[in-house]
Length: 511
Image (cartoon, rainbow, N blue to C red; front, side, top):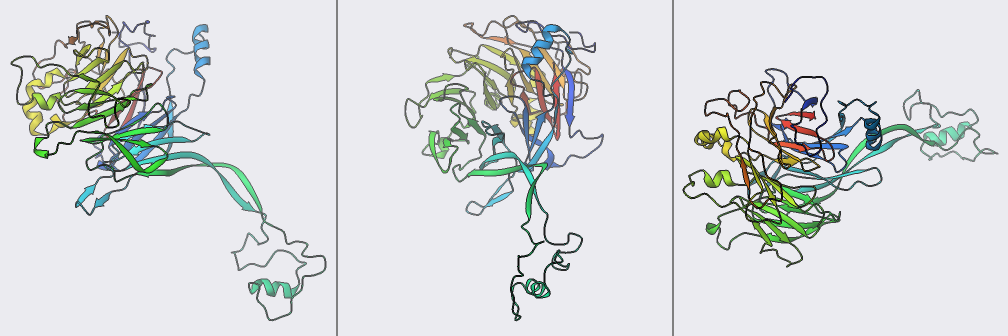
């Protein structure tokens, strides 16, 4: 890979060559030695369907929106590329748009439980009439927000002297009689006889409402979906029908209608009659991108269940189960902990599911339930450190994953603010380690990997990174830092552009 050069090369069709990633922007970058407030740490990140807007949520319950500023349409972009008079290294640029307080800290008096304001997930809904709509949730409550530009209206051309305070200055107009002034000064009550002058008040007229050219962004909570979950909400997902969405906690998945906030329908319930018999919990759930009757959810045992809502009202049985069988003799104390899936994502084509457990990324074909199509080792060099990770609770960190819009690449985060990009097209050996900083390729170590087979192959392939040792350094040659972790990231839906959340900073990269 060529790390130099001012311009990023255009990847060949099929993604056989690794992409060269470049720094684009950073929002909220902290200075050296600056102490980050807990409430400012980013906890959710999501592009909208067009990729023109980006939303982040933080532990302080705030939602911050960014909008794209390079407004040239994609068709014009393609025409310019064909004429080769368009800069190849042009990249999407975003600017801060607005922010609002989505959730506040609460207290459940019935259960004596504090409810954090932290935003767990954000999902964009279909926009309409120039307004943006999105769902945000903390542990218990989901809110439906509408963000719209409102024009500022000013009332002018009043009958009062604008240079003096209201009620203290004289009424403008020399044709008003003394008795009339006395009547007005007394609020319409006077003992004197009062009569309108002949011909009326020549200078008394109605105020005129003038709409200025100024606009303000207003965020308004349209609906609140509450009191439907006994456990912490870990996922929300919009349906392709544009009318419904699901919310999932540890034991249940509820189906909502966007227009109805006071009731939901429980479609999945894995709670046993006796809680002592509980062996697994729901960790993530997502609707199929095109089939409104299908959704998938993952569990703490490393399995993914695909369900079809047409089969029954309560989807207590799955239509397909995806899980990888353990190798004989490989089980250890940490096996079940690191097998827990923290995030799943459907590919845009709807045929593949990407899952992230603690150590690996797995790509599944929904037409093949014998095992994953490909397995990508994210930070295999941490395996000898599992005991330390367990003691400091890092082993329970929930890393997210994402896929590119064309389905040729996938990405996930790691420690030391590192994230990894893998190629998943046939024959690809791409396995790039990057750092969330202004120099993402800093101290880059080349890693080789076995080529994966095509996505439709009948047997899985494990991609292992060579050259990673068991010393106190990571794959980028840096010392282990379990306090800095890149949990949240999102891939632009149509371009090779990534947004990554490192603590309170939002880093953006393009290739």
